[in-house]
Image (cartoon, rainbow, N blue to C red; front, side, top):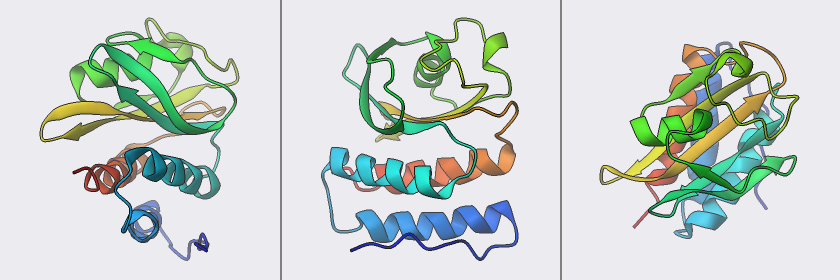
Amino acid sequence: MFQIQPSTSATKAEFYAELALQAEALIANERDRVANAANLAALIWHSVPDLNWAGFYFYDGRELVLGPFQGKPACVRIALNRGVCGTAAATRTTQVVDDVDTFDGHIACDTASKSELVVPLLHDQQLVGVLDLDSPRPARFDADDRRGLEQLAAVWTATLA
C-alpha cells in the first residue's frame, strides 16, 4: 500500500518537488488515465493545505467532463472558454485566480471557493483536460503553487500512451 509521506521541505518549491516524486512513485506502473487521475487527486487533496476541491476534468473533443476528484460534488460539464477551467482549457495556459468572484464567467460549483488554480493537461500538444484546485482562502495560490502543480500535471501526462 502506498503511504503519503509528510513533507520535510523548508520551502514550497521543495514541498512540490517531494510531492512530484511521490506522484511518480504512485502512478509509475499504471497506464490507466482515470486510475492515475484518481490517485493523483487523492495525493494532492491529502498533501496540499487549504483546499476544498482537487480534481480533473477531461476534454471529450467538445467540452470538459468531470473526472476523478476529492471534495464536494462538482459541475459535470464545462464549455471551453467558460469559467476558470474552460479558460485554462481554451487558452492552454495555467490560470491562477486570487478571487473567483471577480473572474468573468466564474462557475460557482461550491460557493465556499474563493481562489482557484487550473492547469491545462496537454499530450502531444493536444488538450486532454485540466487539473483544478479550489481553496476557501482568497489568494491561496502563488507562483510556487503554479510551478508545483504544473510539475504534478506533467507527471500525470507522462503516463499517457
